[in-house]
Length: 529
Image (cartoon, rainbow, N blue to C red):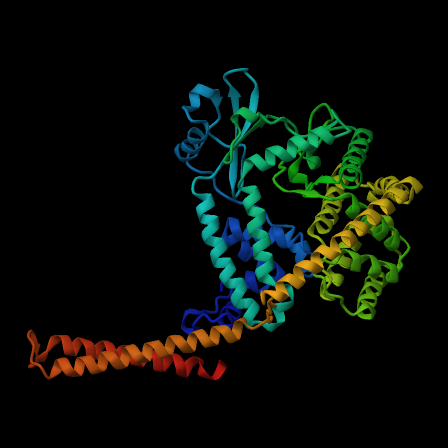
């Protein structure tokens, strides 16, 4: 309400007396997306994470909101030392002093889910970074997720303008994302996998993980000293080389490896005094299969040539919904995106893909989230590169990798191998067809064949039926209470109030209050349901 969303609460069914209009000059000067971002920051960790997830879904939300949510920041006070140490010792299974010869009580970083402390391992004397999950944060996040799920469901059912965004599905994606982030073992595995596949070591690296000290709520890695990209003190030539090296690493991760850091923004990158690049925070990583990388090559080639028809055709092969949209409308939407980039340059590739994914989503084409994550990674690395080198050209960095991917896909040997794979798969399906038909026939003979039908958008009707049933139940209880109280009144059972049995009077009072509440509820909502 503080940020002007009281009308949305009313549409979600919150009673009007509870909704207040709160305005201020500062809020009035903000646009809708800015107000939404500030509201998410005030609501805390789970809502901040929701904003971060939404910022990776340009197929679902407008580009202006994607950009605004990219400014979300975790501004969380550190936990009390005793509380955070209690989590540390519970995960270690012993006293802090048994494992660390020194432990800085003031954290070097504090986020919504965890905070990081500098420490020294007692066994080796090595300086390490200790990432500790906030006490009780998982329980708080799960409670917030239940609230979010309710909000998303009510909004999806009641606010028609927001129905195309399918908010319940986005909340489920958030639930899965947070499930991964709350398990620091997943972050440790991602960092180890990057180190295994990284061809740019030791110039580009992830912090080494100390697996013996790592658990679901605790992550111990080597401590990496350095500066964020915007505060690097190196000669211009060295800064240009670092910008190109970071871009080469990201494109190698996306195009050659298929496993990449999903959010390489400046806060997740450190440049050491020796001119090395360290990628931090591997909680969420993107993954592209071989087939997804080949489709990406075809999509990029179509985008570079501004071929709207081909982009539409490739997008349909990526569509996760299984439903075929209006192809003419789809091509028109893609053409409109191209028209906004009249003088298209390869350096705009990340932003154009984001715009294309949103346009495709508006037409009912749902692109796998990995593609939106890679587009955001490209935009993030461009931002980071420009902090190191104001003349950094992301297009020049991307060109050789895009050409390599196109050549790999069109190489005769690879094409023949893909053809054989597809042919083998088709023959296998043909071979299994008689057995599948026999199973269907046997089920028909046993009268065991059924068809499951699911009608979409019946939730509001179901809710109305449930509310009607609830009111009917209340009416029956009300009638029974009135009849029972009337019988008790005639018995003269003590104790008495004003000469009448107290139990009967209490029953009448309860019935009267309940009856007035039901009547008011019907009068208030009956016209809208």
